[in-house]
Image 1 (cartoon, rainbow, N blue to C red):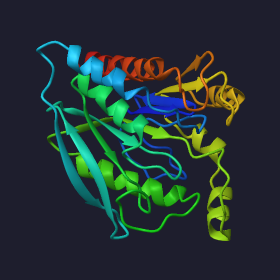
Image 2: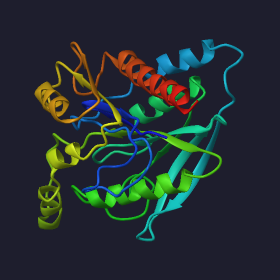
Image 3: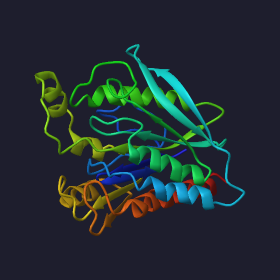
Image 4: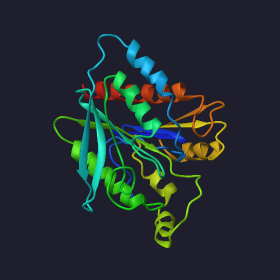
Length: 267
C-alpha cells in the first residue's frame, strides 16, 4: 500500500508513499503524513467535531478507544490511544514539539477520521506525555525510531497503516543542548525531501497568516517534493484558530481520495 504523508503547520499529507525517505529516517513501507512546513495547526474546535458526531447517520461506526503501550527499540514504553472503527486502514497521528497525543488538534482529527469510519492511533513520543524517556530538542532520529516501532506494531493482518499525520516542531524558543543541536544540523531536510518516493502523494496545508512559520516555507517544500499538493488556507494563523473545520476537511478529503485511488489501482 502506498504511503500518505500529511503536514500541518504547514500541514502536509503524503499518500502513495511506498517507502520512507532512505535518510535520515528508517525505511518503512507504509503511508506517511507529515507537516511539510513543519508547523502544527491547531485542532479544529471540539464542539464542531462533537456536533458532527451527533448528527452523523445511524450508520456511524462504533468507536472503541483502547489505551495501548508499544515499546520502542530503546526499551521505553510509548503510550497511545487506539480509536478502533474495525476498518482495515489505520491512520497514525504524531504530535508536535513539546506536545502530546491529547493535544486538541490530535483529538479533533481523530474524531473527524472516526466519523468516516477510519481507525486512528495517536501516541506520545518518548519523553512526552505519558510515554517513558526524557525530552530532548530535535531528537529526529529517536522520534523516527518511535514511529517505526508504532508502524511495525500495526503492520499485521488486522490493519494496514494507510497514512501518517505529523505536527511541526519549529518556531519555539527553547534551550538547545550540543547533542540536540548536532542532531538537527545533521538532518538534511532538503535531502530527505528528495528521497521521498515519487509515487507517494503529499499534501501540505499552511495558513497564509501564519505568524510563526512563513508560508514561503510551504512554497519551498512544494518545489522539492514530487507528487505534491499545496493547500493554503487564507487568513489562517499558525494555530488555525478560526479555520479548524477547513483544516480537518482538507485532511479528511485528501486521505479518503488517496484510499480510493489505492483501491482502484489494486483491482
